[in-house]
Length: 236
Length: 404
Image 1 (cartoon, chains in turn blue, yellow):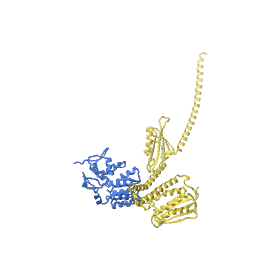
Image 2 (cartoon, rainbow over the protein chains, first blue to last red):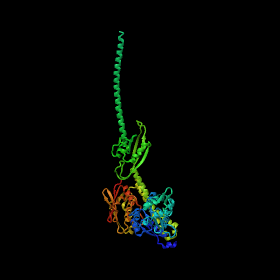
Image 3 (cartoon, rainbow over the protein chains, first blue to last red):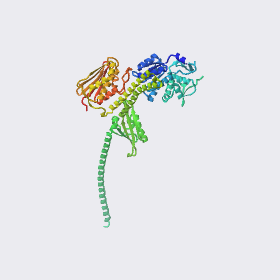
Image 4 (cartoon, chains in turn orange, green):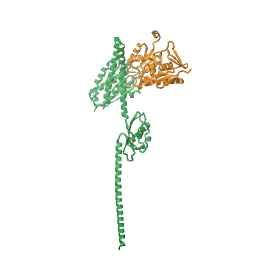
């Protein structure tokens, strides 16, 4: 296992944060956790660096000079080269509504200042952790869906389709358990590593977006009232 | 003879009757004219009473209406007529007069249930109760409706008061924004201190003296930042309190304020290789005002110029001149300037102009220019700013010589 870790290239994290001391703090902690870290200090540089360097994850402050975080986020999500990159939003706006707004916009996670650096590292780990599966089973197929767990690439009827890593994990988790209703809290814990009120309120938004992206196949995801979601058992 | 008696008696009775009728007629006429006089007087009194009532109700600042059981407006005072911009209200149904359904809704609820209703209506930008365009900003109204008992026909009337609470609402919004912005400003340095502390304590960094020293230095810097923010918040709240005691008016020398400021900022000036010129008109030797705030005003303006222009070749001028009734004081620089789109907002609390990441070691509190403006206003002066990027950005203050 350690062998493999050493052989695989270091995962790259981009920090977009205008406060030098916060950027340094995050870098220090992520580097100690084994990540390769790049910094950008304003929104314009942040979007450019994301597209140029294609990091594995972006930590994005929302209050940035030049171009605010949401605008950077939208550009990153629009560009097909970066649309799959998970984003953790970071902000001093702590109102529940602000956090919901961030997650509903499609952020993979959201942290408010003041935050614990350890907590941030845990969340980065949770998002970047490769989906566990039986060894060798890199590809997983289900009906018209095909998942590549290594590259976190998703194919719908053999055509690549852009899913965020959160959407990828949600769908894979459901597809691996077809016909079994999955409890909301289990889903939240699987995807984000924990569950709280804010994330629970945005689960439905994520599902809605996922269904939209899947088009006619979106109907495969079924809402199970009072429990959560399930993927219909595939018809033979 | 006997035959004549009854005839005479009957005649007498007839005459008496005629006299009686005539008398009665006369007294009725008299009575009627009396009644008419009373009636006229009563009507006059009533009219006067109504006029007085209307006059009183017109004097009310709030819109006041009386609405009958069938939701028709029976009375509207001057403020109500004003609110609905002179439209004819009396005799019209509520639904027709109140074009905005939210106002009518509260009132109709009261008419339906007979229970008093108080509701707050926030009308979005550019609308009025009429439903058409008006000034920008939110209009907030409180509508208060309650049934009146004891009407002559037994059918209850409803009185309606509509109060414009827009300015209270705006003040409340400003206060909320201030708290939200202030806590936002405080969260960032707190996040830094908290984060570095966690690394120091939990991850054993404290045993690596080099690292620990660096972390502690960062923490100290941001502790100072928090105290500056808190200090500035206190200053601005004192200036905004409007209390006369907020500033002291006494003679002081502007030269000594300038000297103070230059000394305090000397290290920054030297490290940035900036040039500060002081150009004081001899007449502006002694001014009336609060030395503490004047030092702060000049400090904030000079520091601001330095912060916005960390590059070389920055020239800053602090100058004064005598302008008849007023003194003029300015701080100008030849730096990057302020984009014209930002100019109207720069005195707003927590407004930041910087569009690119500045390499300055520590951010300002976001209150510096607000303090400047409030302090100048507390001295009955005005401040204007003009900016030609790269050439001249000038904050010009005009202060009356005489302070009452």
